[in-house]
Length: 162
Image (tube, rainbow, N blue to C red; front, side):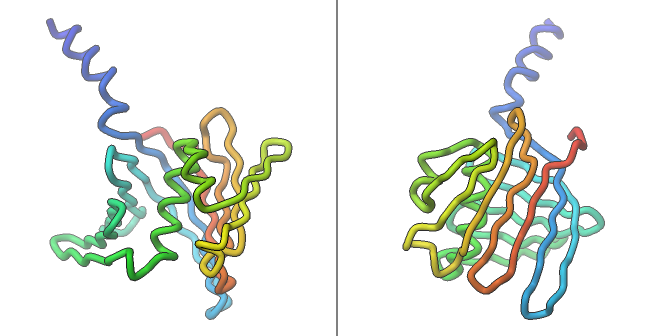
């Protein structure tokens, strides 16, 4: 009986979500400064949770809202008023889950030697200048997003097993 329950649990793990370790490099043009962070990302059925190392803040994206939670304090950000933030999460989710249809809603896609170059369509070109990514055997080598305000974000999946 125990073996059967353990097998069911292990087989159902992907239903509940996947977690990866990541490193993030964020360049802020206005400050002419680059910031580095590491943490974990959980891809759940209807949301993405980001937890940074050494910080009790959790970011929870659910499509319409970004919840910024620090301890018991929650702040909700309406993403209809912050389209650039929403585009980041939509792009990251689509790249991680190989959702080409979603990517084609926002970008023209060009692939050469495993490198995927994304050129924004008119619906997001005022927020994103360009994006690119590379994956090896389902692992995200990197996702680079260059924003219209000259900021940039680079995410790399780490080898950390979660």
